[in-house]
Image 1 (cartoon, rainbow, N blue to C red):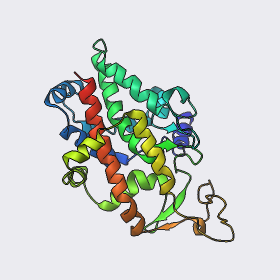
Image 2: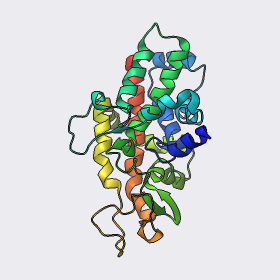
Image 3: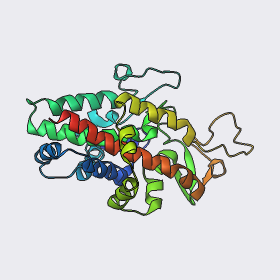
Image 4: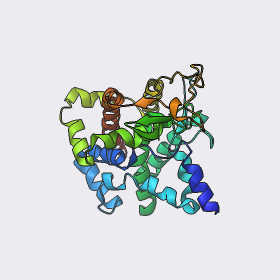
Length: 278
């Protein structure tokens, strides 16, 4: 019963999932394309021959084992206040999430030659996943609506929430495998695109996500019970008529941004692995 309560609670936490399985695999697949040959040779034994795409979802899968892994559940997000211009891992705590700190700590483990094989594998699997999480905009924000999990919307006739729409809904709507989506995202990228994607560091990549967040929220539905003074569809009890009715237009507008974030996540994952696995 205790474990059931924990799992149900997780469904309403900001740390539920980012990108879903397909999105995370896309990040791993793209990263593999840009790994240096020497880095790839180091990755293969650490992961016992498994690909970055294959291990990319492991950090979400272990949420089914809270007894052993609950301490990692708040690694997947960071709460960055709207009026805070200089966010860092030193501001993170159990309530805000430890996304920035966790990436740095797992990189430290990965590049430490004294780390055991098991610890290196654990660290690498988390790095692959958390770099993906960092680029999912709703994993960097104020946390007031649990990363969009409280924001009920109707997408193509199906009730969901804003977080789920971004992690899986729009990607599923594209009806592509992770290898197809990876290829479509990268096939027209230029060297200038790669150069731009490689700029910055973890905190600046988080800042990019933070800046995107406010643009993702649909306008209020104007009804007598839904005044424009607040996001009335971002609460626990939302009437059907209060939910924004989103269609192909929303996906058409935001899919390019989603694809760009997946591309940047993959390129940047390769960058930090190339830099730290020497």
